[in-house]
Length: 478
Image (cartoon, rainbow, N blue to C red; front, side, top):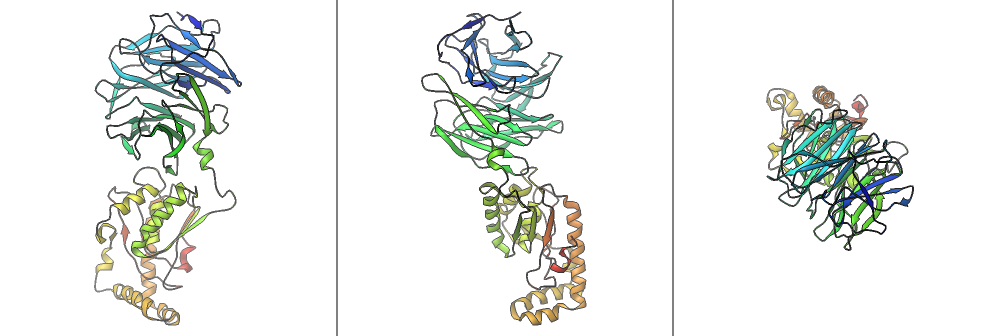
């Protein structure tokens, strides 16, 4: 059965926030609630706006913002009905004369607010709703089987409708406003949900999200003053800070990454008069694009003990403001601690730059940061004496004296032990950040090692690295 279509010849006001998807490149399919409560549809195709269509009979009304997702020439639209349950209608471009089906109820259970839907590939549709208990619920179908099954409880404490997106097969990201007024994020990967995480920054509306490609997410919401703000995620970099991107709006936006791969995001909203508005801005991928396309980029991280926290602040600025990512890290002393953690890559909140920030923020004492290996605590070997003597010489003698002292069997033994420790940790590190080399360079003796600070550990139990200082003469071997 197919729905009736009624045309409105004027720029009809809408009574809900719009949603948008794209059945084909160069086309935007926009849906909203009409003044009489029915679903309204219009499209923007090849720079031409088509007029609004009101779908169904006057009795077929919706009571929430709609959401839409396209997959394989078909558009699936979801909304809450007047019975507070989830309803579903389909647009099929293969039936040009009567492309719309009638509404169907997917499940009688009541929901709160409007749903969100996304697709990670042809035939796959995932739908998310806020339950009356303010938890997030999820159901899906794999076509040609049309059955969406039952709701699955994903928990959470929601104060807004959800927003969902997928950047590719097997990956789902969903966002909500939580009870603290910030954004909560959960994602599905490797066959399972990874758990909720809170993102920084207050928001005053439901979020909206889209993906311009693998590893890219762009999140939009209204700030507390009504201004439009954007937060972006780039795989391997992590979350970028919220940025203020627009004037004050009356309502949240719907966003869509251009199907034509033009490197832009198209934003649709409802103005105070109730009319549809359209604007666009660059994707996070375009904004983040490589700052230094020629050659390799190296970052040197020096020693200095507690001054390593300044390095973390500088790294944060380089990564998120200047969009600089290193191909090579040259590190020493506490810089080696920072460098090894950085080289893990941003695969999660405990890794890479975010993990490094968490590591420093969690330090309350010396023992929170360094763990000495047993062989350094043994008073019998000459290694411990030589270690302290080397440090003493560094502060009291000329370079010539240091060079002479460095040519000793004891330091060669120390150097061998340290190199073994560092090599062991580097083998386990398996960097994911794209850093090709990790070089620890000597800062006290030009051709010797000053000491080992121990194995870096953190509260998350991740494989980290050894912070021992390695000589320049052997750094090429790593």
